Length: 173
Image 1 (cartoon, rainbow, N blue to C red):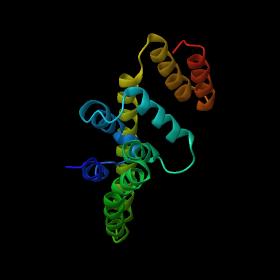
Image 2 (tube, rainbow, N blue to C red):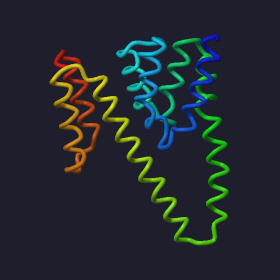
Image 3 (spheres, rainbow, N blue to C red):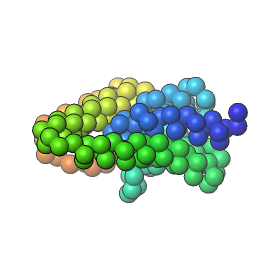
């Protein structure tokens, strides 16, 4: 099976479980791209994730960059289409179903459950990626401090991104 077809089929399947967006499936994407298929290494995955998070727009740019890495512009287009089409169709029909419900309490319960599921998946994904990408005590310390300060203070996370960049530039991480 060609790389493009494999990429398309695997990302299309992932799209159906990407509840909470692509960030919810980063550990699975990491495992596929780095450990199973060896399409990219850990550093490249980290770089692509950082670029995707820093850029404006949808959060699936990591997938687009992976496709681009594998097969240029065509790979980027195929990856983007693969991660988008199944979940878009599924959400379209689910939204129609939810909007057709008559009971407002049922609608609200479904929306709250979906929000809780998405948040849980994204947090779990963030933790799994941190475990796979962090390679030093300093990196783990920065991760824990960032989470702690973000949760317990009103400090903006960009301060910690800048701190992480400075520590990386100085060679501490």
